[in-house]
Amino acid sequence: MKLLIITQKIDKQDPILGFFHRWVEEFVKHCEKVTVICLQKGLPRGISAGAESEAIPLGGEFDLSENVKVLSLGKEDKVSRFTYLKRFYEYIDRERNNYDAVFVHMNPEYVVLGGFFWKIWNKKIGLWYTHRNVDLKLRIAEKLADKIFTVSRESFNLKSKKVNIMGHGILISDFEKPKNFVKKEGKFRIVSVGRITPIKNLDTLIETAKILRNNNFNFEIDLVGGPTQKGDTEYFDKLKKMVAEFDLGDRVRFVGSVPNSKIREYYWNSDLSINLCPTGGTDKAVLESMASGLPVLASNKAFLEVFGPYSEQLVFKERDSSDLANKIMQLKDISAISEFLKKKAVDNFSLESLVPKILKKYEENN
Image (cartoon, rainbow, N blue to C red):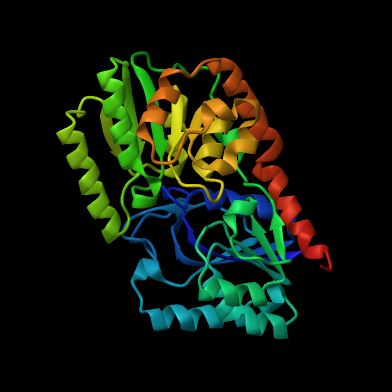
């Protein structure tokens, strides 16, 4: 198969979207040719900023094989939206003999923009979407797409016969601890990974930290991630004020954004991962924690089945700081939980098995 991939960013160091570089690498193993159109790209490995006209002021990089062509719409050059659109149509037309199927990642607007032409050119259209939001763009994209891929029943809230429940894709080998890795000693370390934004409910975690401190629980928390939008910045300021008000400066640390390749080290150095997202899609940070052999608490009920016999211990009530604090203090059988979750991640959420399953769906007639 010759595949066209549409995504937001190709940059292996990006703290939020860097993971998708690995997805492209995996698609390459199973496709004759891969062409990627992205809103923004990093520099090819070994090229420094300033060495070419498409240099990126903020750095970043990609390192893909020769049979992958990466085409940027130009966000790194701060071009206009009109230029984005012009380049998009130029690329899908110019490259149309180089692909026979399309895989759009998380951005249904590209299905809306290109779907009519892809239908005329007889290109099969697949959309990967894992979000609770349903808007007009998604409704139109659902009509145009041939296949819709999502993680779980809760991660796609629009009824459609085109939906395929696939599970997530984590490159398990990326989260294997090196044999010579030595974990830092000290307090019970808790980590929460993800961008700082209201839907992550991190204020609940800070309220939980206050309860833990008042119960003389010896812990520290690393919040890995940063704000990316204006509303997120306001929420970040609120969180910092809460930490100061509760006198938790020695317990709660805002790590900030971390390159995708470095996040695993925070899992390895922690005793527990916490994810406070509401019930909906299967958050990738939970699966990364599992792949790292780290026990994880989540408020998302989509994980009840995933956590199996340990679900009562590991799923807490959404936005309930008291319940979360109790779950943390009463956590037991940590080694057994870690072993179970690691095996679950390997058996059900590996990128190596996900990509062939996606490509096989394109071959089906319905």
